[in-house]
Image (cartoon, rainbow, N blue to C red):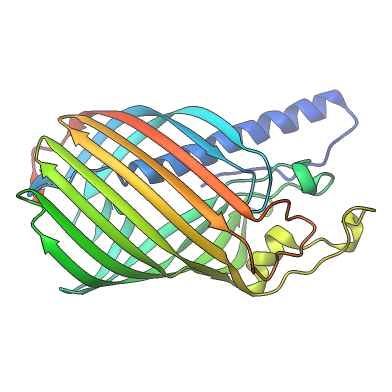
Length: 303
């Protein structure tokens, strides 16, 4: 994942420059991982596809520092493209996962997610320590609700319920630290349309987010040593963390892949909405990736 030092603003210019330099490198790595996750959703749907593909492209990501923070950071970065379609382990349009159980209407796999590092001095967190990037990993149960059409001929609709449960692990200082659990069930609608040389995919999903006390504490608790006249002490609790809706679109034409997403979170009613670190209850993230595939396997697999 991403690594970041929890430095505190020092008085020496050299220390400050070094800290800022490491912070920027970490944020670049974090955003690169996030864009790679988006890119993994842009693979084409076809009867048979190469077992693996490699490529390179460019992407842009615009996100606030954390859920509840104001402001938006926009970063352009080169983005690697990696696709692998093995029997159990896959990187494709549904992301990075390891398939554990595959039945007609039921799938159990292993999926990942994560959040960016938060530098110290960011908005309401000014004067507080920076936050390391957090990776999330765990099992995800997927239940198909309905399906119509044929993706290999013209179009196909699918409706899913997805039930991911993930452990949250921060990486930085200390090197690895458990930050609780996240449960984010959602309903997912997918439309695939087109033929082998021009395939489009739309995905719309939405649902609530729940997390443990440790997870909310990592982002929203204010300990006594960081209390100011405008930032009272606060202790986060476990429970409801808001709701999320996401829309993604991708197109595959020959060796080009283009993917985009927009995600909106509403933090109204969240158990931590009274935290002094919450500047807004609206969270909006957007991203775009364009990539060119340069290498692929001769072996093709059913997809």
